[in-house]
Length: 351
Image (cartoon, rainbow, N blue to C red):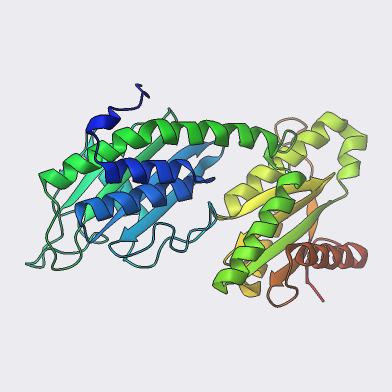
């Protein structure tokens, strides 16, 4: 993979400026938003989208969809990696972007008639889009598209050329961002449970609470503690106890959405942060996780027939219960401890 910068002397200054603005962004979403805004304006296009997916240990580590329309700001509604996509044009679905990524090939092309999610041509048929991949490091895929609004002019060869030019400018910058992201990932993972650690929880929860406040959306926290994990350590050793923690994290990860995050708080305590989720939704997730924990034994292969464990859960939400991440976490913890004292294997809501 060639990650050298292209010849800047022959590049469109507007695209160079957009790429440089993206390079100054601290997060992947900001990088894509700035670059996309630049090419939309340079082409006079009605709109466009950028899609990035990076593989992680358990499914996508990043899956980012950004949209932009002519007249929107380069950073509209996107303060960082946790920001919301700009609402100034209709965003194509993730499925539509994945399909375009498959069809674009290595150099990109014009794709007519992809259907829902990309608008319509003047005659009401599905619109043609210009789609170009960004060559970034292995394990990640990125796609840039330009599309016309309903009734607008479809992009052509000139728009495709500009999109390819931006892709070349963006490739080394995006690869550097991904390398930094990999290094950051090493510092925020819990080695035992293979989920996020407590240090990252404090930072992430603060960011999510601030975003919930800014966009006036809900956010919830589930705090849970495994019941009687000490019995596993006593009967089978601490190595088996550590393996239980990892298996718990795997089950929980399969029971929550991609945008939700699981953290090991310490010992046998875990925390789940649920962006854009109110109390009712959080209770449904907590029950799903409770059932997945108690539903079948752990260590089935290691110590047949395995060991049965349950967990106690506490749930707190913004803005119902508190206005800061620290307060929400404390209330969820307190709710969990009430269940722990009252009989375990159940769910309590913050007082």
